[in-house]
Amino acid sequence: MEKNFNHSLDIRRRVLIVDDEYVNRMLIANILEASGAFDISFAEDGQEALEILKENVYAFSLILLDLLMPRMSGAEFLERYKGDEELSRIPVIVMTSEKKREAESIQQGAIDFITKPFGDPTVVMARVNRIIELSEDRRMIQSASEDNLTGLYTKDFFFEYVEQMERADPDRTMDALVLNVDHFHLVNELFGRKFGDLVLRRIAETLNLFVNSNYGIACRSEADTFYAYCRHREDYTEIAQQISESLADLSQSRRFRVRVGLYPRVDKSVGKERWYDRAKQACDGIKDDYTRDIGTYDSLMLEKSLYQERLTNEIDDSIANKHFIVYYQPKYDITGETPRLVSAEALVRWRHPELGMISPGDFIPVFEKNGLIQTLDHYVWNEAARQIRLWKEKYGVTLPVSVNVSRIDIYDAQFEQKLDAILAENGLKSKDYMIEITETAYSDNGIQLIEVADRLRKRGFSIELDDFGSGYSSMNMIAELPIDVLKMDMRFVRNMMRDEKSRKLVGIVMDIAKFLNVPVVAEGVEDEAQYRVLKEMGCAVIQGYYFSRPLPPEEFEKRIEEQLEMDARALK
Ligand code: C2E
Ligand code: MG
Ligand code: MG
Image: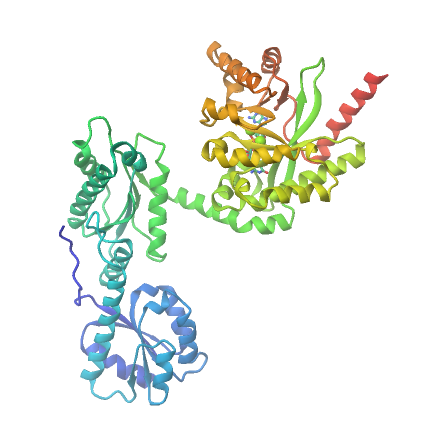
């Protein structure tokens, strides 16, 4: 495969000269400028040098550094430089008049030295050129250049090359692309690895031809993901089509879908890894939209990811400042004549001082992805236990509360100890506390979950299977599930009144529960008609707006008081 890489010495390099003395700066600059191969930036001390480099670290090919400077000396600069991964990629040549400092500065990370006064310009130039070449070669070699399977560049090499392109032509408007094959693991599963490899090679070939004619380069970043960097164009339908055509003859039974994520007109003031995060986001964004093969990154996505980043950064503070509030939604037993309040579900809310009330649908998925959900869940479990205790003290009755558990919690080796500690601290028993596990967690890693659920039940906890019907558990699996309650997914109730078929589905869920010998809790019951139908069908417990929305503790208390009054009246 032909690639358009050349170790191009025709690219202009940018050099940073750091010296506090004007004369020295000019002398060395004159030597470099005479060759016509350099752009030059100046800094008067280490501090200023760091500031300039921070602006755009990838623009620089070399730093020429004086040692004795006010504010921040060369030695101090080297100290910072050594600890910074990006910075230390740029070679440093120390300029010194003190012979004895040479060894010292090499130890500190400088690669070479030039003595002052500068002496023969050709010698200085030769040294500068050699160091730049050496360091670029080394980086190229370090990033093994070629992906064995496809012959495209590797990711490291690709990024190295992007940097060179940027140095050569920083003002050109460029696009970043991420390409990904839908369900590639299935392609391997169904057709074998060899076939999978063939698919990847075809994509690579097509992509490579495309970037070669578009002032661009491409690489395979991992398994079935490709990156490309090329001159901006308005329309990429062509590449999507070409790839699709190149795969058309491989299988009649299957259409391969290669998604293209585009981040057009990359913002060169942010790191290049970011460009590909953005393109990837665009690529992921069309996963479920089969009408499109190309997704474009837009400012909405940026807003969304900034929003999510903000939530992520603020979780600890918000926990500390009690901005997370636990609401309680009552569950009513409807098997008797009048509905009875029997328990509640703890549902977290974020009362954000600036963003207002944020619903869990916005932040739970973010925290599930980055693992922070564990911290939040732990907080909610604590709060719920404290609340059960407070109500017990105030009303003399224990109202069991169920808490939601994420799949990450299940894999936490300390999970059970944490629950034990919370109960002990509040003088509660495990029967006062119920645990909701969503069905999708079971379908993800059934075996481990079943083990954990089993152990929890042996300790006396009740397990509620949440959102039942939303996952893909097999009948076999369901039969083995160690659960005490089945919470029917809200969608069943929502569709129930629409047609006979949907109502039959509810019947089937009821039958499954009967088979498992557990009661059904129906979630999302919003009106009287739904309530009546469910009661008739033998549903035991109802949770939904029909009875009550999730309530803050103060308001929930009214429900408890109501129930206690009813009980007292019934006794009379
Ligand atoms: P979930 O566990 O299935 O909780 C039930 C959701 O249905 C709640 O949404 C509740 O407010 C809503 N709901 C209840 N009745 C009705 C109704 O009649 N109509 C409608 N349209 N909705 C109703 P919420 O509070 O927004 O929570 C959403 C999900 O976030 C929860 O679904 C749960 O999966 C998750 N979640 C909430 N709190 C926590 C938590 O502390 N930890 C974890 N891991 N997840 C939580
Ligand atoms: Mg729940
Ligand atoms: Mg639910």
